[in-house]
Image 1 (cartoon, rainbow, N blue to C red):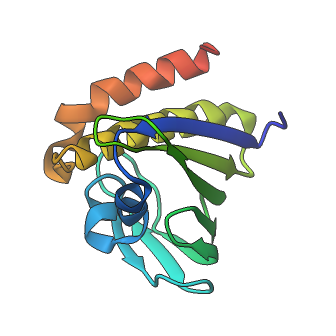
Image 2: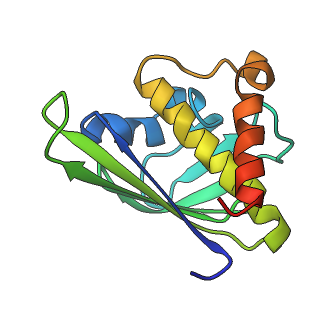
Length: 160
């Protein structure tokens, strides 16, 4: 895999439509990723205003692929190309589940890849919590989630 290509996958025990909404509904995106402005269409803007423990500048993106409940691609100005794919899983406690894959293409120094991995692992945890009814409280993110992020950073830095 090239240095600048990262892949993250997680299965969620909910139907695709629910997981999809968490990627494109502004209120739900804020519950796991960042304050968002999303124009839900191909060519629409996808802006993220970061909170929590990071110091990222706001992210401005354009949605280049918008296929409801299955595929979302966002080209951003500072965090790379986010390519989300949602696939159905036949089983699950609710009769269906969703496999979410993020292919992230990022142009960054290799030293910063561990931090990127840590953020996205943490983000996927936060998405899981949101989908279970527990959105992030950004005012206490550092206390609530900073330790887990630091552990992800440590393990990513060591190649785990």
